[in-house]
Length: 144
Ligand code: HEC
Image 1 (cartoon, rainbow, N blue to C red):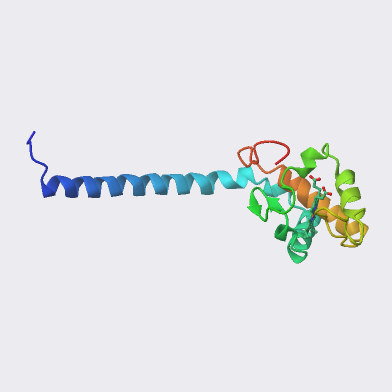
Image 2 (tube, protein in one colour):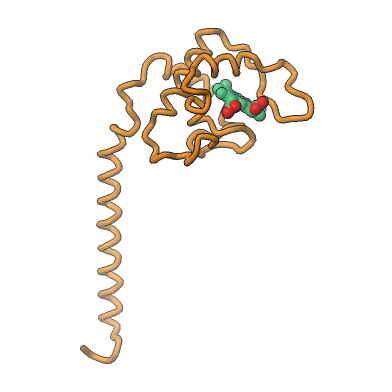
C-alpha cells in the first residue's frame, strides 16, 4: 500500500462513506414503515379514541402536558397516566372532572374544562390507547 494519501483515496472514502450511510438510512426508513403499523396498534382506534384526540387538540392539552415526551413541560407526562392511575379509566375521568374552577392557590393547577360524560370517556380512551402504543418503553418510568 502506498505511503501517501492521495486525492483519489480521499474521494473514494467520501463516496464510499456516503453510499454506506445512504444505504443505512434507507434500510432504517424501510424498517420503520414496516414496524409502525404493529407498534401503534391502529386496529384499536375506535370512535372514542378519535373524539378523544380531537378534544386533546381542541383544548390544547399539549400546551401544558407532554405525550411521549412531546409537548410542554408545565404539567405531567400523560402517555403513561393510564398506568400511573392503576389502568383505571374512571380514575382519569374523576381527576379531570374534579378540577376546581379557579385552580388551586399557590400551585400549578389543571383547568376545569366542564367536559360531558361522553367527552371524559373519549379522553380516557385516548389516553388508554396512547399508553398502549409500543413506544420502546418511553417514558422510561411510570412517573414520566
Ligand atoms: C393550563 C395547563 C393545563 C392544561 C391546558 C391541561 N392540564 Fe392537565 N394538568 C395540569 C397540571 C398542572 C396538572 C397536575 C395537577 C396536580 O397534580 O394537581 C395536570 C394533571 C393532569 C392529569 C393527571 C396527571 C397525573 O399524573 O396526576 C391528567 C389526566 C390531565 N392533566 C389531563 C389533561 C387533559 C386531557 C387536558 C386537555 C383536555 C389537560 N390535562 C390540559 C395542567 C394542565
